[in-house]
Length: 427
Image 1 (cartoon, rainbow, N blue to C red):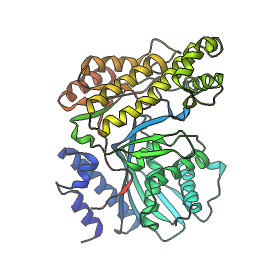
Image 2: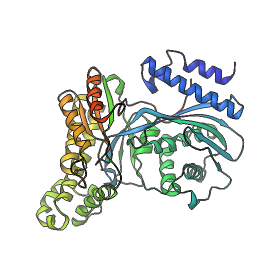
Image 3: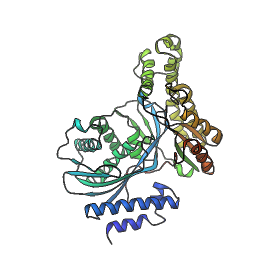
Image 4: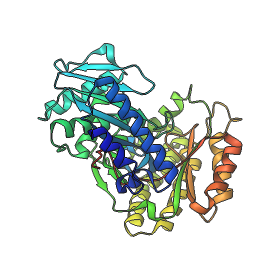
């Protein structure tokens, strides 16, 4: 029996423990995922004429605590979700990496020349080349391979499909050429480095780390050059809750100034107090200084600074609640974080068009349904787009039906925090 046939047989078995960790216990879902892998393996064998393949998966991620805290060197809490990028991969014993992603043109990267190419800015080629360049600089082996990738991490949902792709490539190189020895956190740092330096987009480390490590993680950016990453020992699957991300619509176009105002205003408060970022400011210092700085920085900036201080501290308490298995306390703090984003950070709706408040409407509906039984908050950058809710399983249908009746069928995505990050599937 060929290796692909053996792998297909293993993933189609109804009691595959690893598959259940990745995708849950629903038999229909497990069958859909098995079919997804099977189709990708058959496509790979037809294209490359080999069945000597390895399988990889890399999750998307969700921000759970610390809304707009990272750019002020604060703390965040994030989790890997069960939407993922998967890959069928084989070493091709060459200097060429060849990648075919479903829905995108195939591309190649020549690893004999890893110099930065300005013409490749904002491309997948640049990301892959940068990852190879940085891994090589760090003393790791690199090599050529063929990969077919299928992703279901939603674009524009705040689930970080790009970070998932980056650490997927890092995991592939780690296992094909380095015996799996590239640490998940190092893989995340390499992905971030590539996105910053080769792709051309500044970004923090939260997205890549959550995707690479898996489960719940907390990151402290007090020293942004050496962020402290901690994985939490908490099994979300045992809570009886689903994580629901709802796309409430709204247009992200023309919101760049809104997003840019958040770090700018927080920094203006810090600088008015002689500091660089809000992480260096205490609540006592801020409150004492308010009469002197109001006219200079404006009230909204002060409110956003108050949000930072509260949410940055709240992450510590959320981590403690999860580690103590006090999930009800954790849920209360999710609501507190969401309320702070709404009232103080003011990133739930845009000031450009006050008639359109889809995120606020989604939160209002969530509060009506889940009051006393779940949690809800804005998800990601805010102003438009997605909300996050922790929903008891016995209320899941009611919640989804209500929100999809307003925002459209298929706009609620039922997820969970999965324990595995970017890994090679050992079946």
